[in-house]
Amino acid sequence: EADIYQTPRYLVIGTGKKITLECSQTMGHDKMYWYQQDPGMELHLIHYSYGVNSTEKGDLSSESTVSRIRTEHFPLTLESARPSHTSQYLCASTGGGRGEQYFGPGTRLTVT
Amino acid sequence: AQSVAQPEDQVNVAEGNPLTVKCTYSVSGNPYLFWYVQYPNRGLQFLLKYITGDNLVKGSYGFEAEFNKSQTSFHLKKPSALVSDSALYFCAVREALAGNNRLAFGKGNQVVVIP
Image (cartoon, rainbow over all chains, first blue to last red; front, top):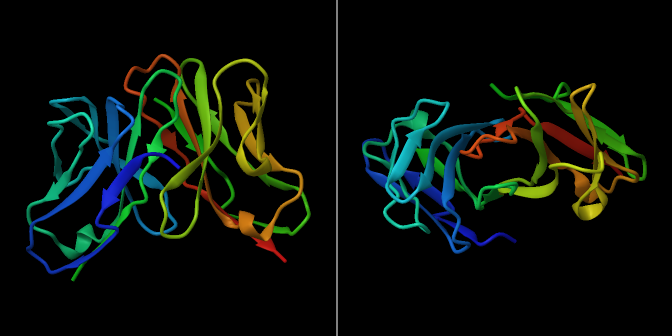
């Protein structure tokens, strides 16, 4: 099992609420990623980070924002949740080089 | 640009029979190739990777994959499927020299092992 954690695992929230999805890893990895995945479907990269104070948008446009103040922590924030944000959000990290990405267990978000 | 194609939506196989999940890729340079498995309501678990060397790569849970450069393929195989192998399988690729380690994932293949 990889040492990458996501909280909460499940979240049901009303429209318009601000939410933050937490992701942390204890492997000292410099590169971290957020993916959005509808159930049983492909993954879409929405944000990534090369290291502290570095963030980039991914391939899929997202209304969420991210920050990377500490190496181990890469939270994702939605300022105003909408039903279209309902999805699973997966966080991943890698130490780079030839290494694979390690994935957290995911957060299943439902916006009502 | 890098991309992966997993041509089959679902693969059905009887328990004990060989399992193959197909993957073809496209990158501009040398590829690093990965297979992941996902169980319901879970994140992706790493199975195996090809970086360099032997074209036949062995991974977790009895899975293996063969890198074929001429056919740009990296098919996942298991000699004898188990019911517990039923899951969603993703192939991924990145260019070896890409510094951001970004992966391109395929759309995934649902594997159903029939008892």
